Picture: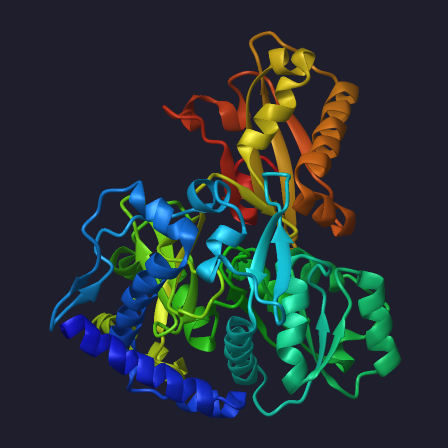
Length: 511
């Protein structure tokens, strides 16, 4: 009875939001401050309702759950949770089941459906299906976020995310078209500069893109950056604060958005508050100990998200489980594991901690009392390259195809590092086997083979490589030397490094 009562009220509230949500201004009313704790509680009820609905209406999910033993959600007067509902991911749920079986009632609507795709490290594209209702809600959320970002400005939006079937680019353009003037360019530096020159410095501009592309644009000498009013919104991968500081020398604002093809775009986003909090974390070890749960040698990205629409949980491995709390999404996601490391915190709990530990001033930057997401990076051991993902298993498979090289290489490391000007590089660091030798010609040949094979097996990498200003690099290390010496040796191979310029200098990667 308690659960039915809760679900009735969130159903009624959802109806009110849906039928009154005629534009982003109306939607903004439902995001009013001082509702944070109430919004969190309702979001958890919606998550349970989404689970019940998906179990009843989605053939694949019903079959998936039948293969697991669990008790299900826990609902009482004081607490609502999904309990021990099984988590799902791409490997266990998306790939094994047919596309139609993962849809509500196993049916594909005749109209209003958008397909997009991703490939990641799997090579074979995965299609994602989005219906009219969920696209409308995603549009409203993105519009509200963008309005917060632009304030009173009326900018021209230059979308440089990859276009075509990829999830981010086209979806972003369609979402923002209703509230702005947008040109969908794709990651083409020449066309961006040509557009800026053609329209001139009399407008405000917002450029949307991957961090490496935004960084590459700043090297253009064809425009006088001091004469233009340009801001940047980034996505696809994280950004260090040193890179943000560099970009702020050219862009008036630099803020990011967090999403995933498996889920939705713009699930969470940066704000002045989250950027201030991240910088405070960087400078205050006591605050790190208080708020951070992972010791990875990095300060996490910090975002805010609406807990009425999304439930973030963390499993025993520290991985994020995401539930999209909507029953009208064509392909529901309940406790979906995207294999990112992170955790979430309710705003008012965070507020109390900041006040107690001398960071009350940060709260002056907060305009929305949304929950906060701490994101440490990928759990599946991978690095970002111009918006694409590259993992060690791919490199292992490629090396196995070339016995001559495989025999001479003991291990390797994928290193994403920043140079002095905050440009991000991808380095394949190779430790040679005992007494093995490879000359520069052989090293360049190996690099060419790795890059060529990645472009075949990883379609996202192919797209990223074609537009990246900085191409992948390779560096050979004699056995047991440099970053592979005894001081760096662990029980398990450390295949991934994401490091800043200071660390890159310390490790001898850059001079």
